Amino acid sequence: MKDSKSYCDSCWTYGINRKNIYNRTKRKDESLEEMRIRTIEEDLKDLKHIFDTYIETMGETMKEEMAITIGKAITDVIDKAYINIEKNVEEHVSSEFDKLNVKFTTQLAILNTRMFRLDTEINLLVKNFASVIKKNRLKGLEVFTKYLKQRSKKNDNT
Image (cartoon, rainbow, N blue to C red):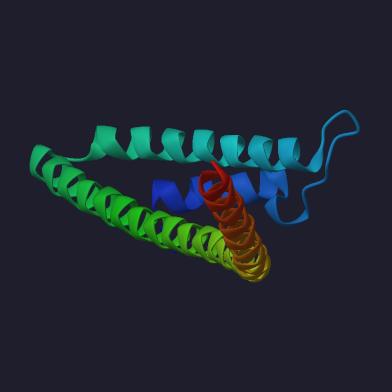
């Protein structure tokens, strides 16, 4: 007795035999990425053909169950992709934040060093300025007292 196979199994076997799916080669005029895309497109066409022929033989309740199952599978894939994308974005943001944080810390250290140097120079300038003011004040007092003495002498002489 002949071994019974479903239509999908025979299509799948036929597709593998026809395309030699495990030993596909790249055409001369296409890149590796183009070859990958082409093989995926061919596989999708085969799956669509199999799916279309299978749908024709199926009842309405089976179609509804299949639609629900496919919908759940699609949402699961989307959820997993969303989680993966979210993780990738978080990793990217955290790595960029770390890079910027290191850069900011370096710039802050440079700024602190410059501010410290500026502070010491200002303190030195203030000390020098204070000593100059003190000397000039003493000179100013001496000059003022000499002026007062001369004035008092003039007043006494008149």
